[in-house]
Image (cartoon, rainbow over all chains, first blue to last red; front, side):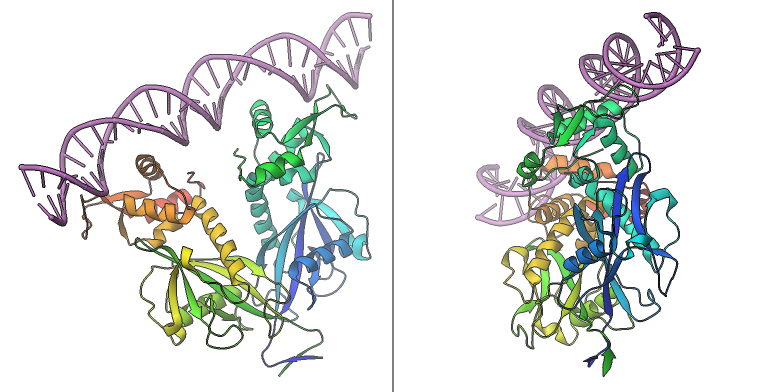
Length: 227
Length: 227
DNA sequence: ACATTTTGAGTAAAATTTACACAAAAAACT
DNA sequence: AGTTTTTTGTGTAAATTTTACTCAAAATGT
């Protein structure tokens, strides 16, 4: 039993985990709640922050425990603090945006209940998670301009059309194929790969890799990808 | 006495309050702590979030109580959760960025201890507030591209050189006078004022007002001021 | 009056963005 | 094997945006 002179809220972390594949586009990973409140509802993986860990650590721990994924990118994007957001007690949550390589949900204990939802097929969520998702998406859309986080969502070797689909899926727009490729190549972050991608329906496109070293060099200067 | 089955952190809000005037440029409002820990150190106004208010409300309340200012803009920009950031107990803070019309600190109770510090003369701060300040500044620099928040820092009627100084002060750069004016006028958010500004050392520049109505119309479309 | 400082105004060059068309490659079909 | 279908690769001209830059007039202080 822990006692305080003043009431303290509980603090949780929640992870909005994005994954991507060509078939379904941008998707979020949700977990079906097994307990009240909102039992049977879908929600973001997350849980109570421990008293001896910071929020970043807690978010990462919950993410791994509940989904088995290792995030390639993770970033705090806001605290959600509405007084009535949790019916049990006063709970505030610190929300994280994570990118993972989409795959079958491997799995920890609760993982059996985890499932990918394409962005346009997300059900109504538990707590205030609908709102959190909206904020996460807009943050992702901002970040994609400043950081090459998109590459975290693709396999190490990818084609230009794949990259374009990803960007279009995130930003909800359509780009001219040639202009998109020109801009991307201009950034100098891509290097052509010798391998040819297999599993192709038609003509085989050139494959590329993300040049991480080059990015590290550029990063200090600050850059922006404008579309 | 409040009891919980699990330990709960305390939650505070902190406000990084920016003000501006031509003499000192961009400044932050700090409060000298009267109690331990960090007694005598400077820190952001802030305090414990109440159990029956959300963080936004708490931040606004503390801001007014401790400084007497009414923010023209306020925005949450991050939760800071290092385990040892407060020596008393586990405390996480939700940080806010606020803009106010700079003036003598009017004053609530603690206001006597509040003071403006130009950005390049900020002392070493209490807790992890040095780090919070760095994040706040970079957030302010981002926001200035998307929203016309700069106008909140100026008097209702201002001159182009004043506006330019403000932007230069925030972004830490220098712009060509004519190109800056052209871009600003192009946005269509400024309207020339009939009044002439007084208190001028040399030739009297045209004065402008921010056209808020026009901004409200444009906002839905989303815009960006690039420099 | 004169010197000093600051504003107002416009253009040419450079860079970037946008729109757009056709030939070649690979697979699928007959 | 030839034909059809789909997708990739490539380049350029036009429009737009950004950047650099100069000189005359206005106001103040001496």
